[in-house]
Length: 242
Image 1 (cartoon, rainbow, N blue to C red):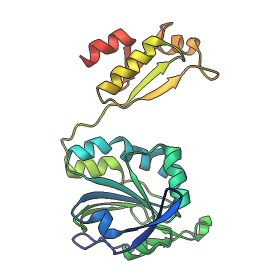
Image 2 (cartoon, one colour; image 1 turned 135 degrees about the vertical axis):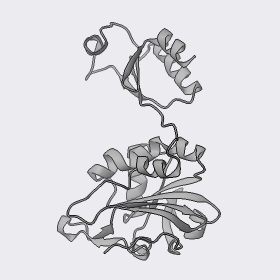
Image 3 (cartoon, rainbow, N blue to C red; image 1 turned 45 degrees about the horizontal axis):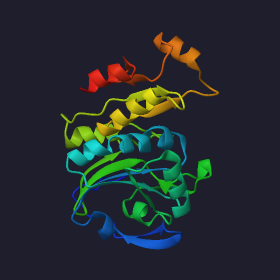
Image 4 (cartoon, one colour; image 1 turned 120 degrees about the horizontal axis):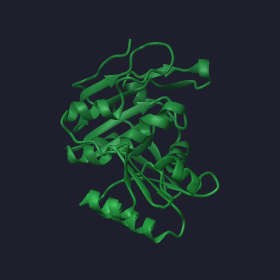
């Protein structure tokens, strides 16, 4: 039975991280003392749910969490520092601090170290999240103890709803561009100026203007989509953000 540890202190552990190609020790106090921190822990870097949803959504909502008093977001996994650094680079998760709990000491101290030998993983973390204030766990969301890898309550949206149910979440933004297009460059600059995070789909081998025509009915780029709605080109974007 996994124990909820709300109102208890986080384990005191020294983590072996990497910086400038050297090992650097980071203590629990450095991560949590005097701060409001979200921790979400998962079974392993590069695994499907962790890579497709869990980490990306926390990274996406980092700005909203900061607006609501969160100083840092920590992703914890029983992996070594090399793996965690490679995963962070692969995921482009610049808004999240990835901490390697390589020996599983923190996870064991949380009572969340479980046996994943059936998958060839050995000892790993059960999936959970928690809100920690000055080293004390204020709220903890633990995934139900059922077979497999449940992902129901430790997600970023559940945590944000706990912190502030009325928080405004950013809408998903995508822009279709073409290399060398000055209008595309202007549209991207405008989004950046407004602090709007976006995904860029650059036309090339896998997509052409034919795809743009099929999706939007237009023959030009850029084409911008916000919150599932087709906004249009650069001029329409200027009017929208205004």
